[in-house]
Image 1 (cartoon, rainbow, N blue to C red):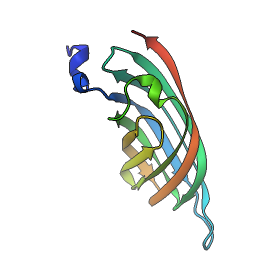
Image 2 (spheres, rainbow, N blue to C red):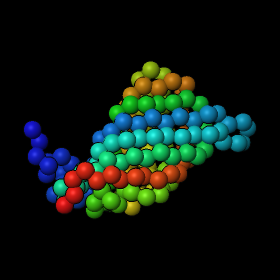
Image 3 (cartoon, one colour):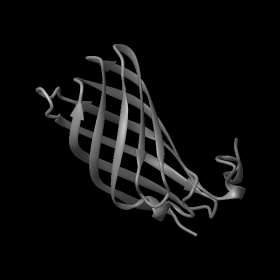
Length: 142
């Protein structure tokens, strides 16, 4: 079994997370963007030994039509603790695929989080411009 310090190379700081998420977008008409949204739930780990549950619903605009859902891995190299990822933020992302699908999202939160999703999808490729809160529920705090 891995020790806490080996999970994300935590001796150097930063936050990592694992979880599940889904995102989708509707197609826009002409130069107008369609609607988009995403939701993710996962565990965050930091170098101080903190562990928290992150819940992130968001909505906004998108281009393309389809959805992606699957497992997620998050890295936030500029975050000091899991708390740096909480609160309101904006994000931009893109991805898609039919059957096997993938997506990447970059958030403007305090940690500069990058989230990769690998799973299933339908409808094709697209991009999203989203905003919403990230709620951190503490599980282990130091």
